[in-house]
Image 1 (cartoon, one colour):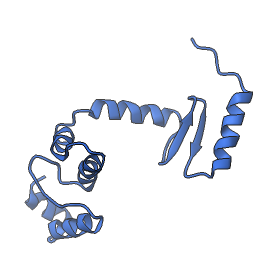
Image 2 (cartoon, one colour):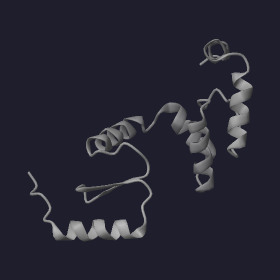
Image 3 (cartoon, one colour):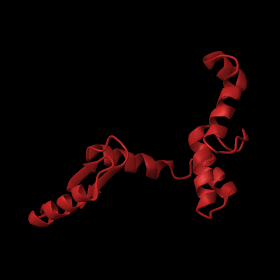
Length: 122
C-alpha cells in the first residue's frame, strides 16, 4: 500500500510507528518493495534466516504468495476441526487440544485415543 494511503488511513507517523514496533520486536525494518511491509512478513523472513534458510528467498516466497493456496487450505481444514487459536494440536485427526497445556493433558489425550477405535475410513 502506498505510504500516502497508509497515512490517510492510519494518520501521519504510521511509518515511524511501524518501524519502532518492528525494531522493538528485535526485527530489522526494511520497507523493501520486494517484501510486503508487514510485521508478519518480516517475522517470517527472520525465522527463515534463524533456521538457516535464505532471507532473500523467504522474502521472495512471501512477496509472491508462493504457498498461499496451501496455507489457505490448511487453515480451512484446521477451522473445520475446531482450531481457532494457537497453539492447537490435532491428535490423530480425532482429538483437539487447544492452548499451551501441561504434559499430563497430552498424556491423557493419548490414552483417550488409545482407548477408542478410530472411525472407519470411507
